[in-house]
Image (tube, rainbow over all chains, first blue to last red; front, side, top):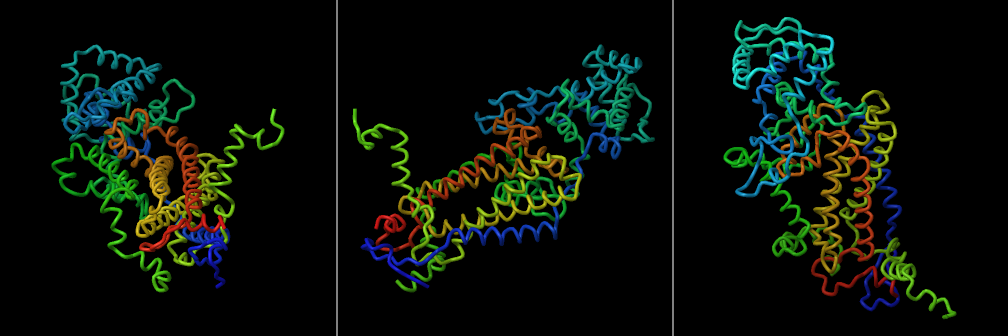
Length: 315
Length: 218
């Protein structure tokens, strides 16, 4: 290999060798393209169809109606979530007085009884006076009366039977709730509710906050995720459906969720703790050049002697 | 009034900028055809492959964006280009992490190269954000599940109302426009810094001059 010192004026006599950066980049581009093509041809990519309100309500109507009952009763996860969706507090995470979630405030408002159930039913009631009457009875009832209906209906749904699109439960005092939710089930099973949940009086729509929160309040979506090893306790954020690698670079972020006390004593604030830790760790990584100890590890573990073995051999 | 061109350009921001660029980033630094003799390890290839993979990520992503977000669900060609995009992202990350660890064990921040390291780490973080919004833009079950899971972590930081992972339009816009532009600019800045400072000399080398600069100041 041709060698010379680094320029005639180089008093330190650094020897240099030819190095073709552009050719190296071209070869890297060609080799990586061959590798990517081979992987794409051999393994394709995962594309498990999305869950719709329709597919959920058809596959598990009891879960759908139970969830809708919880939404009306204010007993769902979304109902008590807190910012940014509403003023609840169940999902608000704080460490002592530090609660950025509460500070952030409500900026993606979700009024789950109306957004998920009542408003779609009112739209469907345009040509169904019986449904309109049921909704009126429900809305004019006292909060206490509605709570009794929902509690009783929730108990009854645990032994519900399904016949086509109709749920049958034991006789009881549920007010207009079964009729309303059976009609909501019909809307869901025809696919109409998928559109009603995202319409918001706009023709174009790309915000799926409401249907996703609604589906996530049920057990069906989580059940499918569990079958695909995607839940939080299964290193979920790293995985993809099937055996595809997914976001493996999130391994350190996901790791904390698998370890106590993050998944036990600190479970109620795990997200906030993990995010803050990852921010600190990322800052540490960026500031490695200035952190004693971290910046010295390469000297203590002499991997560099392999990388520059030619230099050390000749030195 | 001055008559020579030197006087005329005095005070010119354009001339000053050109002068700075010529001094700090001459072509011999930007595209050197020689390197110090110790540059001879596969570790040096990891960064180049990362850039190559990024090029394929962008190229396949441009094709997907051209045909729209439904295309890859509905056609064999779309599915194939989505697979190219997906696997190029995997290759990109594998080599970026190898590059990161390689540079760490070379302590590549030495002798004034800390900004290069720090911009590299920022690029890594932005890449993770870009990939994350890509996974949210898939419009399949994976996207749905990642969104409903990730919302709690994002919401816990207080930014969930402004960075709403359940809002496909917002995530898609970030993924195909803002984050890729940011990544490419950061990578360009990172590479320019590497070329300005030259490759880091071996650890323990007694005299550690800025090799590349010396090569051009002969």
